[in-house]
Length: 127
Image (cartoon, rainbow, N blue to C red):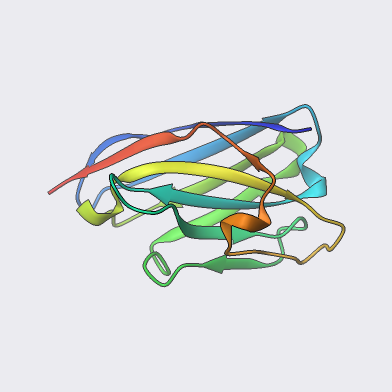
């Protein structure tokens, strides 16, 4: 079983940037596809970005395409979400998630495709 801990959230002005990190323990991340999701107050949890085990395949929600970049460093057992040009509507709790898969290029935009979740980190973008 893998444990995930997010960090890097905070308060930023619109147009600013943040980089979220997701540190894994218990298992090596190289066996997992990774995803980032977010949940705003009183809204459903929604997909943000995903990256395959190999890092060679990425997938983004339309709302963040061109502004956010997902990455991973399997040697450091960490996944990242670089968020640029932030907007007030990006305000949410951000969660990283892991999907144990044998398929190197698999990514998933569905929350039901992930078995393990972190506790989340708050991102607040002021206007």
